Image 1 (cartoon, rainbow, N blue to C red):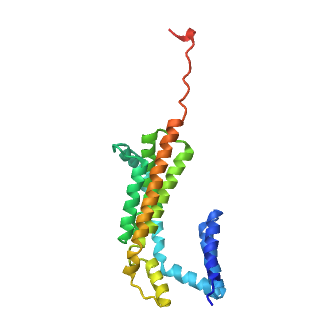
Image 2: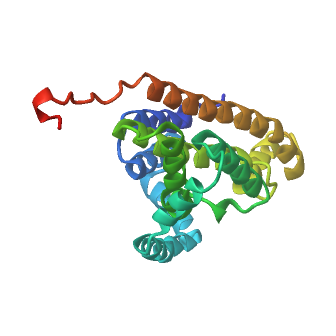
Image 3: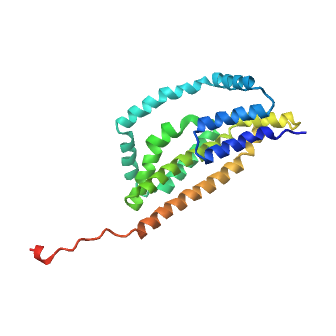
Length: 240
């Protein structure tokens, strides 16, 4: 009989993210719960987590990238990104993010998944350019709308990476799926799995691209409905 209890880790991740707990804490708790429910003892679970971290210790390269990004921002990277997008005729927030979505999916599908990302691309470049394009098209935005534009920029990076990387047959997720299918007697090649990820990526592009363009339209409608600033009447006595 198949033991479904280890899948409770997925529920923990969903609940933790929905309740906005610390993501690192949620993932660690879910991993430990999955291991324990799968029949491993606590020490074995901790050993597995430690081995995975040690095998992927190249993640510490992030600490080298972050100071570089900070230095570029200090010297006006965001301001230059804004100025660039303001000089492009016909640029809108929706079109810009749709192009970035396409770029992110294609590069991830070719295995270049680290060419973008929140710290190195979205925060210093994509989000400021999206804000500038929205303000150029719809005028000054409220703080809430500015935050939504930033959120859409971050979401675009997530969607592009998540649905693009599975097309690359040497990605870890494809190899994991292949191993699971093979263990149940369904031998498949990584290329076969990658090909079937293409329709999903296309659907993701159409759906999220539509969301971006619809959000851009809503910003425009809100700008049209916004009341004009009241003009102070000049008293007759002040007129000369």
